[in-house]
Length: 232
Image (cartoon, rainbow, N blue to C red):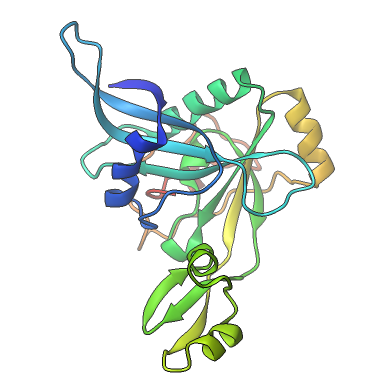
């Protein structure tokens, strides 16, 4: 297996087939991938088995941050995704980025074990928010609502489409992790008021263990809470 850069077009099939969202984010800045070995001289091939996608966040931050918006693997890939995340962060730093953030979606049963294994800081769990709509029984993400109908307001869409069933959908609150890539990143995190709290525990009923715990433990980040969830 080889860790490399990648293009959004290369990563898209993996997101389409194996990520719960089935869609690529906007404002993509960098993609990184795990590729199967191949080629005439044993170098990396075109077959991507895991990938991460970094973007500029769709929500407004008072400091410049880059967001790990997609982390996905093929079902038969058993390597540690934390190694891919670390690889991506090294290259982000070399490309001038200072602070990376990511949200683990508790609605999908993800607690952020990959970030725990990679040593990221944990700020806390965000409050529930409306992340989309249920239209005729099907979930439509908020961003898709905006691009399709120009609004995500259930009241407005009921006026526009009175024959359809439209209800708001709320997530369960996402876990926010952050990683300073250099000294400037630590300064930005401080200005943003980001905290370093104890890691949340996984819900073992829904979270498969596919990562090793961190190599060291601390009072804030005890080793036993680090087993990882699946894709982010």
